[in-house]
Amino acid sequence: IGDCLITEQEAAILGWVLSDGHIYRGTYVGAPSQAGGTKVACGVDITQVKPHRVREIDELLVGVPHKRYQRTRDGKEYSVWKLDPGWSRSLLSRVNIHDKRSFDPWQVALSLTPVQRKAMIATLNAGDGGHTKSDEIMIVGADDAPTTELIVALGYLDGKFTRVYVRE
Image (cartoon, rainbow, N blue to C red; front, side, top):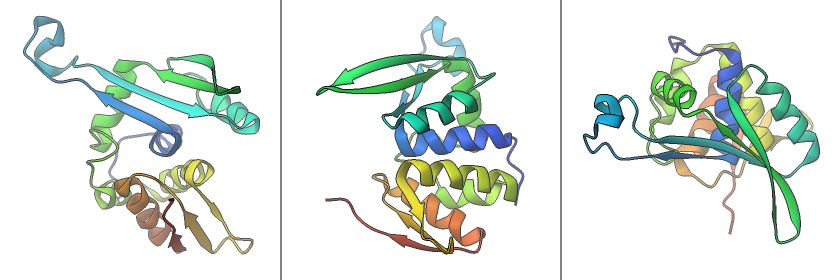
């Protein structure tokens, strides 16, 4: 338990990626440019529409190689942070996550220290969940099954009751 080699900041970033972000992985085809598999395409981004969350994410990403873009869809403006592929590939390999739909949430949760878990819970909840007034119950509304299970696992390890609801 707690043997994952990531920082508290990286755990928080990963929470944003898993809740309000995307992970794209290319396929290794043996091309020389893929350097034996170490440079297969890896795209990681975070998308956010809430202005106060935009500021939080900007502050969290200080020191992390990324580019931020402003987009508009259906008249709504939102921000997208595209994280550097090499940085992203390194982070994802250290937590053993290939993409958002196929990772072992309990393995990830158990590999984090209590400090890393709290950082990840905070950003996962900011993106896909919330707390009740008593802060004893976490409410989950994630779209991806592994992410939902990760929030449940993190809550359990943090001593919180977690309620899951399904978006229709």
